[in-house]
Length: 125
Image (cartoon, rainbow, N blue to C red):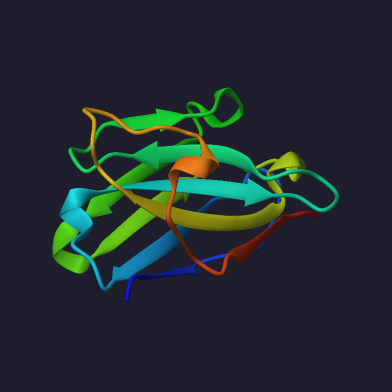
């Protein structure tokens, strides 16, 4: 059974950094695209980034240059490194997986089949 478990969230001051982890089990991570989504209080879920099965990444404009997604297939883990955090990054962050079918990955939540339970990130003084 496919499962994704996020961790690494917490409270951080503006300008700080966090690294989120997404551990996959029940499927071969090297064949899957993994995306990060987030949902802030009172807002719709939005895409943050994705990394394809062949290590191609995409980022939404608001996090480009600040967030980096990496993958370690040997550890069945995908990471989201978040630097220069802003109050607007406060949200619950989810990772999601879909079988990799194309050269890159997509930032559309309806394309993803498996979801984690989320980890909360709060950026505040």
